[in-house]
Length: 242
Ligand SMILES: [Zn+2]
Image (cartoon, rainbow, N blue to C red; front, side, top):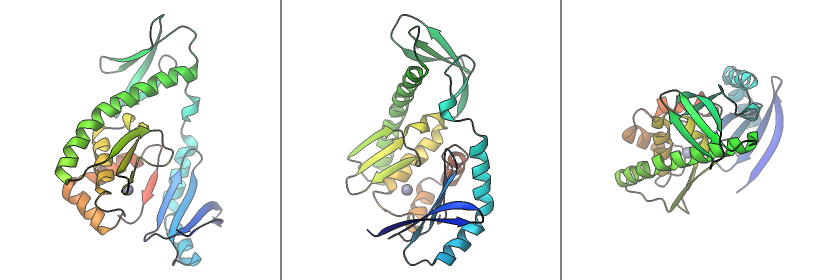
């Protein structure tokens, strides 16, 4: 596949321009600093790219402004009172130092209890929580995959959960392998279902084309609402063509 990457400036904003063998133009603004990347088909001229980006300048600036305001994940201190999200709900973190194996528990509707050994570092506390998110996510993904594989008559050969910087999920149709972003644990469950369906549909249609959008409309009519919810979060990302 031919790929060419260049850096250009559009109205003072640095833009990473990637030309490759794709059909549609994709624009994304990525955390943590609001990096702008536009992937375009080989045949589109520089001028057309420039106009397309200028057309979306308002959206790009809003995304960048939001990243600038957002507290970074790395600034998390993992201390009492901090807000953490699980399945779209906000919880208050309570840290309990105990000489026992680390674990996490939800208490009531608003508390997320983190049990760690005394002297545990911030990074270790984060890891305990990440492991818990991973487990919770996997427990929810398994039945969703089962349900949708049956409905769509497709079969993923393998799936997993991992930390991803710019995508909510990915699918390698050839290998039949699906990855889901660990961050989905923080989002409402309908969003998780949307990403599961989206990635499974790539087993039927690789590209984000009209056929793909049609399949989404057919199987999950509220998918655009889910996408909005996800785009409002840290991984702001827009695909223009659907
Ligand atoms: Zn996709």
